Length: 623
Image (cartoon, rainbow, N blue to C red; front, top):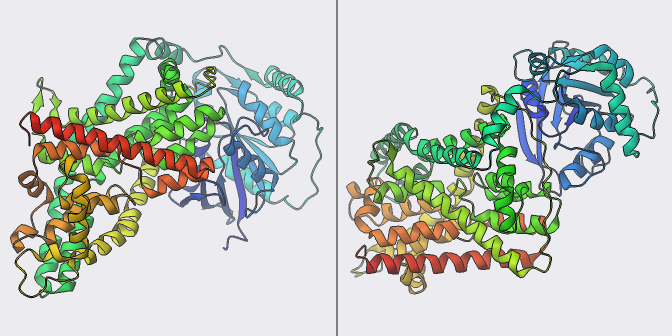
């Protein structure tokens, strides 16, 4: 069935209502992620076939607290629900997802959505959690009073959306019938909305207490001003330990597979440009990046689990005072944490920060968070220069160094935002208002779908921009060949070799050799390309076939000084962000000036910090 024949269903609701879990329940892996036309707001669409044979296209709209938009996310949701968004067909049915344990907040938004007059179903989600808390919801009364169909769902349970699918079929049969016009004038009257919400709660909901006992018990510890911060530090520390401890066996398997593939392809082809391209360029380059996929997925798994558990808003609350003293707010925490995955979605997530001053400050420091694209570079250098041994009998020394690099990025971001706070005219502070959702155990299905999306995005980059840059770099390193009578390595006479040697004049104070200088250029497109670029450079500059097939780690550990490695590690804490991050800053701020400020101060910090690191390390005998 074509897209035109599919019934379009839009899922709407407050943040933390379980809307995305319900979307995953309905569509499974049949999803695609993109951006809405003209804005950097994530667009998730999926499809499913109902037992009736109908075909549905489901759109997961950004979470919103009101149709009176206070952010770009809410504006997109409002316009799509009304059918006014350019380039997007109007939804045939709106499914407003509400949290059964927090109807006091979520019913208000459902009333606003109802006022749009479109075909609508209210999905009362997390009914299992409500039952455990002794919350009794009379769905029949709620349906009668709302005037729209109401169904229970349990998005984390297999078959938990069965009644919703049946109701969608029922609504689909009546799409062309005249709509029943309900009493209006609620959406534009806040007092009337609150009064109607209270009336519905009194009629249909019996709640023994407003919050769950387990939530209160956990919050006494996790929101404690001292114990809470210690707990957060321990959680983040254990994440970085796990990134190394758990990923090593899988990385070893990938390395063995890459080496075997290179030997097999090399044995099948005669010497020549094609063999060099495949073995030294594509296999050596891409293999050196793919090997870090296990570490990236482990990091993502922890971030997704923290997000699904309801812990992240509490971490934002804990850090609000510290971040406010540095010129940010607790709302900056989640965008900055998202930047650990990639600065692009982190910058996009700043749309939830309503204060323009705090939003701009968060955008400018987001690139200092250690994104997953830096992880391959860190892992390569740490594996080559930091011994793998236990500290205090239980801690991994390499994991400690990785934790230190992440901590350096965080401290630097706070320092930069503090400086910006001192320079700006408006030094007022803004109160933090956050919804603290109930704690919940992350569902394995949602975690696996999230990890699959991240893995697919990473592999598409490997097969797209990284592959293209690897082939381009191979060409620049291979041509032109050495002239007749040349005494130096052929690579010195190539385009890339000449560029690299010229750049060493600028980067010599940092301890960078010409191979590193070459790798920095494609690294501006995507940081993880630095690893594949180094692999390609060393494969092509190897003195023998045996040297060319070696792993990159022993090559650089034998060829670089510790001072150079430390300098490069520090460079990537501050390195000017990739081109896609610059483009996102331009789109979000609509200002080339902010793009220039961001790129300029990051390059200056990177150069100065790397130079100091290298010169101090050399003075201490590490050169």
